[in-house]
Length: 314
Image 1: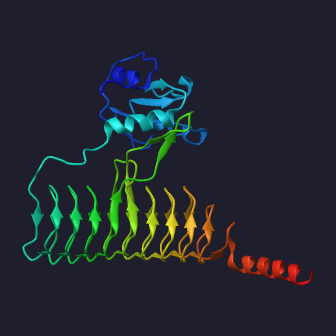
Image 2 (image 1 turned 90 degrees about the horizontal axis):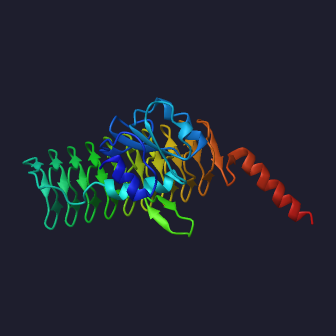
Image 3 (image 1 turned 30 degrees about the vertical axis):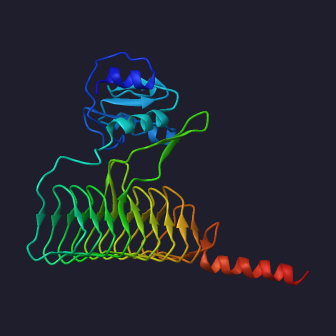
């Protein structure tokens, strides 16, 4: 789509070379011929190192790297609108799949276009395998698992019944009159070797890049992993945990039952979050945390003891 067409869709003025825009991307990963956006001062530092050919901004002076500045009132909303035009097709051109001869495919399994399934892998009844999915060797995909387009699964992974891998992330931009405009996600999900995903767990695809579950991590039933999350090696994620988008966990992190995180936070290696702990800020590794607001466990226990004593003495 040409820049002039994009500006007509967004209802903004256009001046400059009418170049072809092939895709949307983040400021840090955009390539020539792609369009990006900046909606906050925090991200403005990435503009002048970005290779994007055009950038949606509030002020043209923000762009000093030769890219075309597309000035609009709400870059995030403009990006959301354009994401609908650049979304990947849900159903793709049919191409042959490569399924190992000794893989087991049970009845009522749907296998899409250009799928690769490795040696000794078992796909149980009712599973959905989308287009361009790769599944390694010795995996077990249990009944009614859904694996959406572009997902990559390593060797010896176990996906338990009804889990969903690669669904669209929960992202919206908001209009002045309160409408929520969907942001279509074009990234994917990667599960590395020896990962286990529990029943009815959902892992969302990234906006542009990859939601990553690194090797040997085990995720319990009924867990939600948001878009762009990165979970390190050997993590344990207990049932009913919810990780908001762009949460990063180091290696060997333990998240207790019903714990959660806000978006864009990180937890260091070997940290433990007790049940129902709420991660609202970056946390160093090697410690145990609890509560909300989140505290080191020893401080949380002291605080609770003081509260109980306060009411007991009254």
